[in-house]
Image 1 (cartoon, one colour):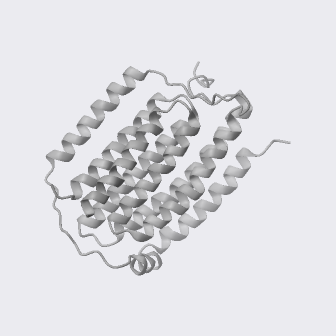
Image 2 (image 1 turned 135 degrees about the vertical axis):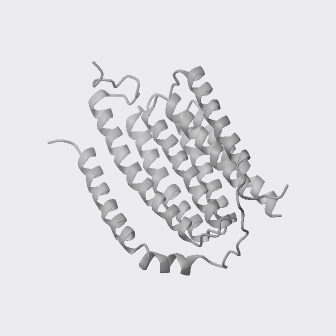
Amino acid sequence: MEVGLNHFLFISAALFSAGIYAIVSRKNAIMVLMGVELILNAANINFVAFSRYGNFGLDGQIYGLFVIILAAAEAAIALAIVLNLYKTFANINVDEIDNLKE
Amino acid sequence: MFDIIFYLFAFITIGSALIVVTARNIIYSAFSLMLTLFGVSGIYALLGADFLAVVQIMVYVGGILVLILFGVMLTNKITNVEIKSGNRNIAVSLISVSVLSAILFSVLLGTNWKETNSQIPETTLFGIGELLITKYVLVFELLGILLLIALIGAATIARKEE
């Protein structure tokens, strides 16, 4: 079977599922952040694959570039928040930090 | 040849992504995330997006991954060797994730995608550069400002209070 659009979408779906699993099941806040990165990469593969096989020109790749820039900003902010959490609670397990819950 | 390289990159990407989400040691997860990002970069190269592949390596591996490693080092006590990250609700999350991925894969296989095998240009640099200063110039500048704001905000949040 020749490699086509479906194969790339398959990889993207697998990465997306792995990222959702990391977000739902891991305790450590940094692991949750890694799950978010996996999901952003999955979305990016979809953008580039449709841009290649869908005859849309280069617009898909431009959006992929924008997603990478947003991921960089998101990682910086998220790690600052994680460091602050560690200063306040002395751990970063997301299931123990539930002060907003009554 | 294309197929063999594709399957190689697919194996690297998905295999190391599985290690990322299952490894007990968070350092192992961070380093397998690096392999995943390299695999994704190879997939971009296979799809004809040469500029995006290089940007992926420079920004993700050179920037975001180093940030994540800093985060791991600063928030765990390195002196006790076990930098473990526990799981919770494994059964529930496994079931929900497998249902979700079953839906995803069935939609993916059931849809009749219209494929046009367009000719990929020799390099996408000129096209991307031209689009960035014509059609997407406003988004481009706004993203620059957003990055500046995000970095200033991150420094403000993470700094010690006096």
